[in-house]
Picture (cartoon, rainbow, N blue to C red):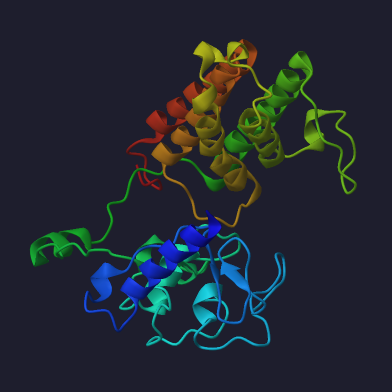
Length: 307
């Protein structure tokens, strides 16, 4: 049977040779595992490679690579003449054979239509604004002129010292609220080398309490049942809205705030006490809100104030 098979394969190769009148279309594919008796007496095939093919697991092409055998090693071998012909099928270039043969090899990147997939990675310094984008049409000149006018002045009936006093009292009461909340439900407080352990609410500033509560919320340490109406998603937003109050209370060099802004900051602290379900804290901050509002109303129209 072996001589008959070899004779049949030799006939197929003879039909696919360049001298055949059938042309490249008559080329018959050689399946993996088919072996031929070469001119030098060695069996050459896809399962058993010839001497010029590197052993499995070796890196790079062997020393005796020629342009005629370079197609076997893919685009990473460095020897890939674009005009070389496939020795088994005339009319098929080396590059097209590489696309078909190297797609399943580990560590190789297949070439698709002459494009290396490794070059498609976008540099890390780029963002979505470097890609396709658009610009809006500028607003009409009348709209721009109306926007660039002097900003309106809102009533300011509280003195700077009064603003600082009200906001500091809210800031301190919120620190007490956070201290009681964490102690009540026994949430962990990470120990830090440069800070002493927490014994009283004043051991941490309000910004530090906000950071701790936000970390507990994002790490899912705070169950929704301990918050007002289970508003676990709104907790971070409510906490961030109250941060400006601490800056306004501690940094007196900031410009004077108008009445509406002061009331807004006090209201932000009221929302924190509400979502943490601290009734005593809510009553205290609400009383400060009403007291501030009464002072503002009493001074409206009084000379010396911007009411």
